[in-house]
Image (tube, rainbow, N blue to C red):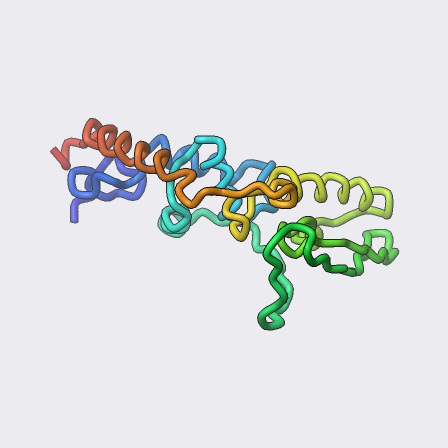
Length: 202
């Protein structure tokens, strides 16, 4: 197999014409290291890129390139699996109380009580255990940002790219919402890759 001199993953652009362009890979890398998305999973970044028309590719393509390029992401703690849970069919049908204990660096324990809408996933604790808070005041300040970012900014894969607040207000996502964007991006990618054939590919 020939190693293309212009391909970020070293695959011949003459053969693998649908591979991401150098520009697209650069955009992907920038998004993955952006401080705004430090505590977001890859699927949320992928939906953000689609929503903003920044990078129109599938989630599987994101994972492929992350693995191929060896791009690391913060490992986030998850709750232990407890089997199938309750799933509601509309916003505000079922709410859960979530209680956790946070110990700040001054040795004080704080008990956090969250309410979460089962349908919209309104508020969660994914961010908390990857941060060190000095004291209760620092924790409260951090919570203000965490709650706002989680509910208003971060798209969720379980909500097909909506934020919890959007889902809570009854917004729906058509199955083909980003289909045309992705198809057009594929066409642009083919044309751009054909122009960037290196001396080996030619």
